[in-house]
Length: 110
Length: 117
Image (cartoon, rainbow over all chains, first blue to last red; front, side, top):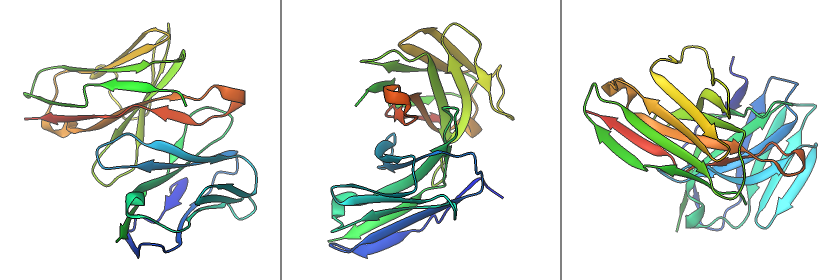
């Protein structure tokens, strides 16, 4: 079993839709949770970072963490074609090493 | 946010030759850098952790004699793929951990697409 599971998609939604991306994890030592966006042939860029259970909002993005269920989500409101990318969840414990999900490929159709 | 610059962005080399990839932290000092490899439609797989002034730590299954890592300064880490073969063709990405307030988010380079022919 992988430490971090993420549905690879692909996921296609119409412009303006709400997108829900999810990851589950098995390692209870994970304390820090991140979402990265990666455009084709580019390095990942950090979107959201959180370390506590609950919701964290930043513009159209909301990160949700449920440590009791070992489940994290990223919601994108009013999705735009420019949001089309691969979204990677990542998490770490006290060490700085990140463990990544496999990534979900998202396409927002105009 | 912090900037990590990685060069080259793409390289094509002949089988048997060596390729060096550079990763620089532009506006901060990075005592640690991580090197990842990413195959198409797959996630990032950690290859090694580079530590300034000491030997790199390699993940299980990664050949340290093939993937030479040097972290000679606080702003530069290099990965050299020696005697490259077509199966080494991949997307290589470096990252430096964030240092603000104990956060562990990482800042990534732009990645290097290596094609070995």
